Image (cartoon, rainbow over all chains, first blue to last red; front, side):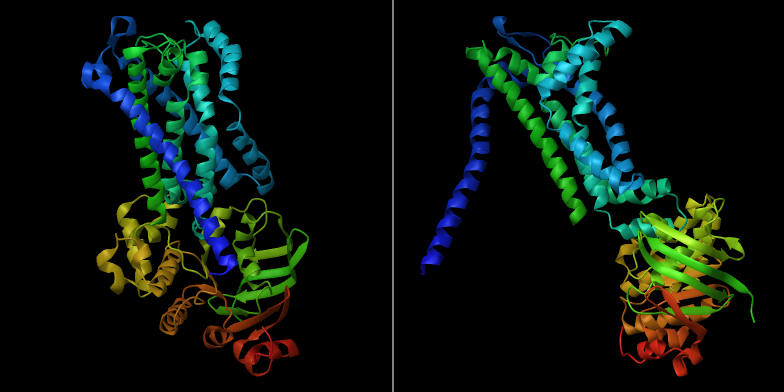
Length: 285
Length: 252
C-alpha cells in the first residue's frame, strides 16, 4: 500500500466514524426516552394515559388527553392557515412571477425559517394576543393565536419544498399544456399540481411535523391551561409545552410521565416523517 | 397560387438584447407543407414559437414587425392567446405526453377550452387517434397511462392531441429527431395525409426529411431567412451559395 492509499483509507475510516456518531445520537435519544417513558405508561395503563382527562401529577393522575387534543387542534389550525398561503405562494413563485422577483422573494421566505421561535412567540404576545383579546374577546392566549403563529412558522417548509417539486416538473409538461391552449392557471391546476403532487404532500406533512414539535412560540401564546378548549379563543396546552413547562421541577413518576409524553410525540413525528419520505420517494420511482 | 395563410412582414424577434430573427418576410400557403431547415441557432424554432406566441413564456422576449395568421395580427393586444394556440397546434421535438391516460391526453385541449359533453369528447378523441393511425394500436387501452407508449407512439399521440384542438395549422418542431427510422416514416406518412386538411410548418434538422415531405422549403441562418422556394428548386438549384453549402453538408 502506498502512502497515498494509506492516507485515503484513514480518511475514509475517520469520516465513517463521524457519520455514524451522528446516527448514534438518534439511537441514544430513542433508547433513552423509551426507557424512561415506557414504565409509567405500562404501570398507569396506556389507554388511561392517553385518554384520561385529568393531569394532576401531584395526585399521581396522568391523563394526557387535553394535551393530545390541544396539539391536534393547534396543528390542524396551523395547516388551515399555512397550507393555502404556502401553496398559493409556491404557485405564484414558480408559475406567475418573473425570475427576478423569485430570486428576491424565495431567499426571504427561507430566511423566515431562520428566525428563532422565541421571536415568533414574542411577536405573538405583543401584537397578536392583544389584538385577539380586543377584537374577538377571550384571554387572547388561545388556540387561534397559536394556529396563526404556527401557520406562519410552517410557511418556509411548505413553500420551499413545494417550489422545489414544482420546479422539478419537466418544463415540457408546462409547454405542452400551454401549447394546447390551456391558460397558466389551467396548466397549474391540471398539469403542474398532479405532477408535483407527491412533493407537495411531503411539504405539508413536514410542515405538520414542525407544527407539532414547536414548543417555545406555543408556550408563549397558547395560555397553557390543562383543559380541552371549547372554542378557538380558549387557551390550550400542547404535548411539547407540557414537557417544557414541567420538566424543571418534575421528579419521580411525574418526570417519567413527561418522558412518556415525549415518547408519544416522538412516535407521531416519526410516523409523519416516514410518510413524507415515502411519498416524496414515490415521485422518483 | 393558393391563398396565403401566414404572412410575416419585416418580422424581428429578440431575447433580451440578442436578435434571434432579423426582418423575416415569409408567406406560408394554405394546405401545404412548409419545411424550415437550418443549423442549430438559426432561428427556425424561434420563428415557429413566435407563431403561437410560445416565446412569450421566456422572459425578455420581444418582437417587431407584423405576423399575420389568416389576416389577423398575432401580436395585437386583442388577440386571445389561448384561442390562437388552439388554432396553431404544436408538436415538439421530444414527445412529452402529460402524465395522464391516453384518452385524457387527447381530450386535454378540448376540455381546457370548456368542452364538457362526454360523447363529443370521445368522438374527438377517437377521430384524432384515427387520423394519426394510432387508433388500431391503442383502442383497447385508452385509459391506461400515456407514458407506457413507445417513443414513436407517444409522438403520434402528441400529434393526435394537437389535432383534437381542431386547429387550422400544425407546427412541428423537429418531430422525429428522437425517433427510429420506422417511426419517422410513419410520422412523415401521417403528415402527407394531414396536408389535405391542415397547413403544416415542419422545422427539421434533417434536410432529407424536408426534401421528402415539404412542398416548399425555407432556409434560415443566424436569424436571417436566406431563401424560400419550391422544395425541388431549393434542393436542386438553390439561388444562394450558403443554402447549397448547407444542404450538401459542408456545414451545420
